[in-house]
Image (cartoon, rainbow, N blue to C red):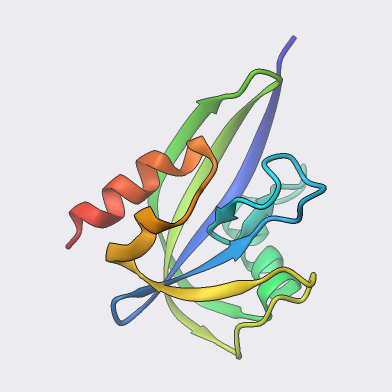
Length: 130
């Protein structure tokens, strides 16, 4: 049976930029860029996981996040279900607390970065927002 991994993903909108982070080279899809987030624990809702992961990974406290979309993607070894949120209000100074590079990128420049295939639909929808 193929493993299904539930992941909470946050898109931090700040003017016309979004926050992205580079995955550790030892991770699945290593060195690719991603929107911050992480696996949902059995006792958490996607929104609870999003808030926890943002504090742990990028030092941001999420105050308001709205559901944006769900993406299910089949990799060879697993299925990933991404619960994607738009983060409108947050506080803190973004930093990679797990030694991962992070950067603010203009939405129109996202295509210049290599993301896991599961993120393709997210980027397409973001670009359509203008």
